[in-house]
Amino acid sequence: MANVKMSKKAASIDMTAMCDVAFLLLTFFILTATAKLPEPLPVDTPASTVQTKLPETDLATITIGKGKVFYDLKGREVRKRALELMGQKYGVKFTPEEMEKFAIMEGIGVPIESLSSIIAMKASDRSKADQPGVPKDSLNNQLKEWIYNSRIANIEIDQKELQVAIKGDAKEEYPAIKKVMDILQDQKINSFSLVTGLRGKDF
Image (cartoon, rainbow, N blue to C red; front, top):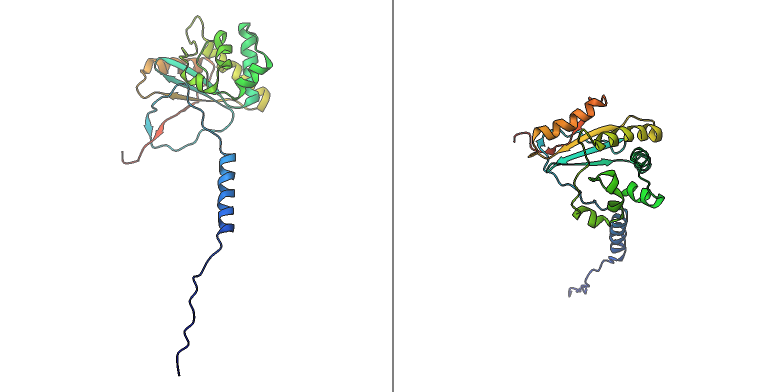
């Protein structure tokens, strides 16, 4: 009896549904991702094995590097209130538009009198601008006032005490770091975080 040969047909799988899912996921991740803002003062932090993360809110970050000090603050409403208090302190008026822009921008490194010109810049131009740093001299200690007014603003808005983190360049000389620590201790802030980079435990 002759064997009946079955005709072989190439198997095909409809990938349309898989492609739709893949593109939907890709679109979701692109639309929900937030672009990382360029740091106004890039620093090479010292290495550490500690993996404790900084809080997402109620935090002020003081960046020290190249002889300059930059100041950053978390929370839009807290930032606006702190700017308002700083304007009252130094007699500088900011428009509502300037306050809204300040609420979403990165850290600043200029005297309060020059802040309007930095706010008016595009984000890409701010990172390229040669900001001299927040004044911290004994005669014009604006860093102290930023910390003081930020603490007031954070308590008013979030009813929480502001936490402080110091992000210092590994090559920065100790007196520059100590000066910032002294400013914090003058305001009875004896507990603060030091930002470091991650390294292996057997390094």
